[in-house]
Figure 1 (cartoon, rainbow, N blue to C red):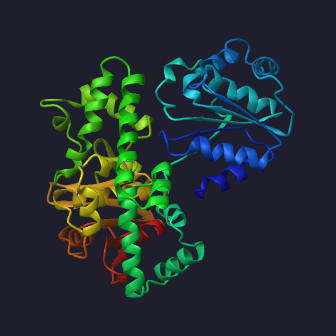
Figure 2 (tube, helix red, strand yellow):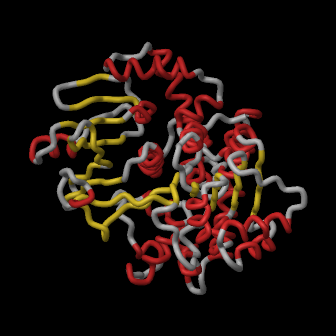
Figure 3 (cartoon, rainbow, N blue to C red):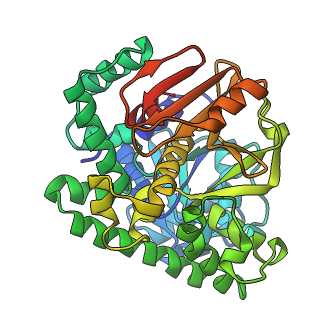
Length: 431
């Protein structure tokens, strides 16, 4: 059974004195239903489950008056022998995007407080036009991702103590023993190939079979394409699909700014912006925005019109690149995709740490892959797929801009100089 960090967040929510309904969002197949059911069964006397995708008839519960007394009455009519005991019951509303009125009803449950309510959905931004009234101020939100690198390490049998020992080297800026460093790079490459989708990770842990991993990943990608066909409106179906399928080509370019012409010859932002937002709302992609100047606050210094696009799960990106890319990653023979893959995994790690993504580019000759805030200062992040850490861009950003620190992530062991820290790629999880 895969251990997930979100369990601790769910326990913290349960133990709040004045809690509201909880809405958990995330892409399909990141494990939302499994983890919420596990939490509910282990922490409540009574657990009531409604899935609006599997059984659309449950939507009828929310067609009338949304006061809690009426909702409980309607629930008891549809589930014989249901136990709805105040203070001892959690109600789980799954795939809530298929029942906009249920999302509106979350306010009623939050005000009533007799029952704990958790809602979950994969495409929460898609059907927003159908929601009668958003329960603003009456709902708490959590975003669930696929497994991060630490959770992946737990899954393959690495103990929390071993990971803490690793962090101690990071904190002290001391080099790891060579054997330990090489093993960690091996695990990191496995994580790049496998990604963090729970079903995929579970298959890898049980079989260590990369062919099985690839088959499952392709199935998830096909599922995403099916969602586009099912949920996108009209012309958005074709456009969102084209944007999604263009991502590997976008990242293979030396200049990785998202270009609409790669999606379709002569295409413009006006034609495809909504399609990209559809993919973002579905939890499939991340945006990395260009900084007009490399200074804090990043949000105020960034451009919403210039950005890169990364896949939320690097394993899924790998499955879109071809049959032999898995072996290339493990063996270190990456060709044109090496920069794309390693940038994508660091973007994924930063997103799972709760960081927004920013990069800096100046006249195409100076590009810093990422900027993050560390101890109240802007830190430049340079990502290398191998152990060659030379970078004219990093030297330029430190000498010509008001940037005090840089971090180079590569396959080299940890070290430090006056303004630059050299950190192994796998230690990005400690930033």
